[in-house]
Length: 248
Image 1 (cartoon, helix red, strand yellow):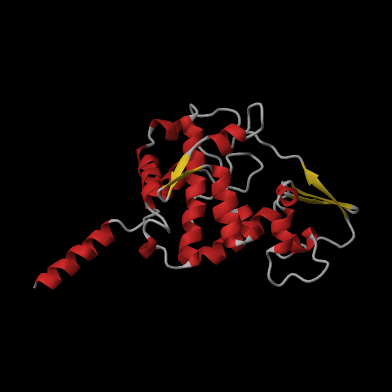
Image 2 (cartoon, rainbow, N blue to C red):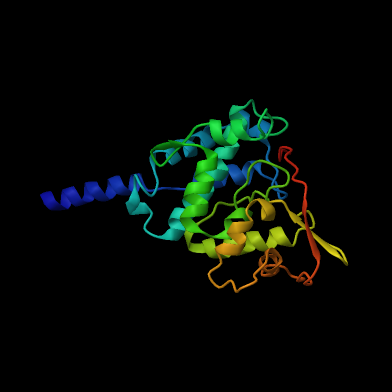
């Protein structure tokens, strides 16, 4: 009887603290439109659910509650959702921000480096979350179509959270959408202009695919997800990144 009672209490305790992305799902569904733009002003006035989710991020995660993050998919979904939520939270904390999170003497430094966030029991910043935990930790170039830095030229912020059971399909869909969008890939008879993301993170796109062959190029990567493949031999340039705020 005592053993049963101890097991029951352990089960209830573990269940109560299981990580749940539902609060973020509510925020995205209510305050993000189909284009990925955010009603920051409206959310700023009613941010209780987002605050609850941010508090959950601070005290849960693969390190502090490993029993809830036993697969790579569960871990990556956690970090992707954490990044997107903390960016939104950062915009709100700045007023909400009206123009761009990149403003300042050093573009983006104040927002992505100096602003402190707490994830999985550790204080960090958005740049470290992206570079050290997401990029280096999972080595999947598709993440660049999944995380959103509150800017117009970012990949579209989706109205849904990333979930472990469907993560591979979600990441494929995100990258496919990104490279088929005229804003990110523009092809003429002689040139192809790509999103600056492919320039900034070129090594990720060229080195991380395990099946990449010798001579693999950034256009080869893009073509993996393009409905209309880019012809070989075109001159590659990069589109100026619009750092304006992705607000409604």
